[in-house]
Image (cartoon, rainbow over all chains, first blue to last red; front, side, top):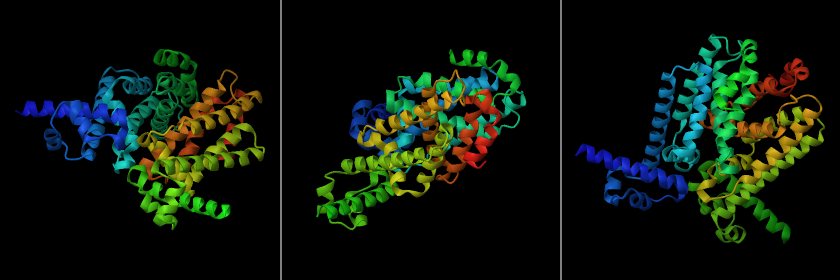
Length: 209
Length: 209
């Protein structure tokens, strides 16, 4: 019975992701979600009493998904700076293929429409990037006078803006290229002199450029 | 009579900016706008038949305002790279003080809620920044192998992300600092070797850092 409830909840979340991704928060309706999830409106209301609840759940689900992917990537043991670049690339790839990430990302940007606090995903990303930047600096890969937290905040901010502008101008068709371009712009300015000599290799290796 | 119509329209736009800034598109109502603009609902509907029309007009008004400020700045004849930095700073300052810019910016991000095409402001910003980056490169200030259009797109994308993350995390309290930080991160990687020797001065001069 608990399994069945979970299956219903998952189906509703998948349906909600698909509807929110397509229509945005304002124009999405619970009837559409029930239709797409193939559940009754009663079942939908039982799990999510309001559209706000459903949107919050999609944002939470997206954040869990992205965090799990980042954790998995960390376990692969790449050098920290390379991990930072690969995480940005993977996030971009998810924005192209994962309905939950596409929906969650759209909802996060629209969040003010339903007064949702969306600090947590940004704070978690910045903390993780800051940890990696600090490690990279300790390994002598980043300039000694650089503030790792500033770099972390800037990378997360830039990634946010890069994906918004790519969505507006090309419906994300150029997103992967823009994320690589972002690192090609940022790296030369933040690497230590030693690391700069081999940065061409890092950029090529991590971005395929 | 035409003057009076224009005064009414301006009052409505100012009221709309204040309401959209506070409530966002989804929760703003035309009654609130009429109240705040001190006009009848009849007068409001005469000028703007729908909430969509009103939101589009606020976005257009914001874009005109920012474009005029950029034009004015260009006339002051700063070197091109300095102009780019100063435009970003001024945009940040407007986001702190100008209700029309704050509202237009919020609506642009929420635009998917009402299916508005918001390409134009991004395209105009990127074109202007690209022109300045090309000039800066011709003057030998930017690396010769840099694509000025890539830099332009990256600067506009980063500025977008920086202001979103600053709004989410600090309600824009740290926005000016973050814009300066953005340039401090980007400049060392894009300047020519010659210009890099004096970049400390440029950063200090333009960002007060």
